[in-house]
Image 1 (spheres, rainbow, N blue to C red):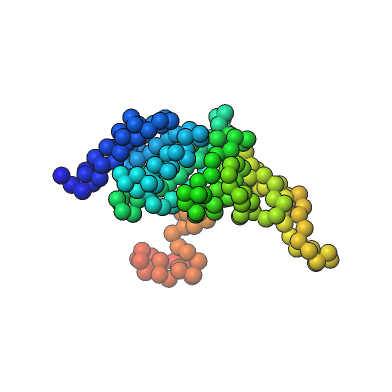
Image 2: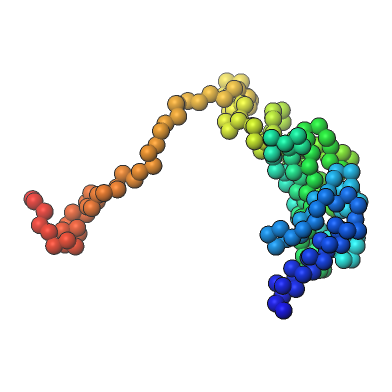
Length: 213
């Protein structure tokens, strides 16, 4: 039996244990070769504590937390936690859902690094995290409006920033496009040209041709 097969079998056993013995699990299955667990917000802390402390899972590290936006859903956001067990050499992905107003319990008391990731998710998606004492924006500027990674956020943003020499300060102004959008045909200007400018003699030699003088 290969190492990959054994690893997949071990993850399958973990998935079965979670789906049958842990309350609040919506699903636990192998997806793309990784163990993916879906649960509810009210069961999140209990599950995360189990995944950290139980020696079967031993997820010592939370590698990152990210959001995914599905605007057509009532609970439009997936909040995705990627956990790593260094001692057991496996990864577990945990997913919960939320809307714009329903907070997700913070896991910063389980993994201190979660504060950075929760702040980023709040900044980019507007997801709220209850129990997080430092829920501030972390990537955008002070006074920024909206959440840039939401699917309904305009590609140009709402305002543009520049330094005003007269006022000697940074100012925010409504976005103004300085030129109309242009249409491109995406065709190379060199398509169909056998001889590039300046390459006439080399082309003549290659083709055995005599170009007019």
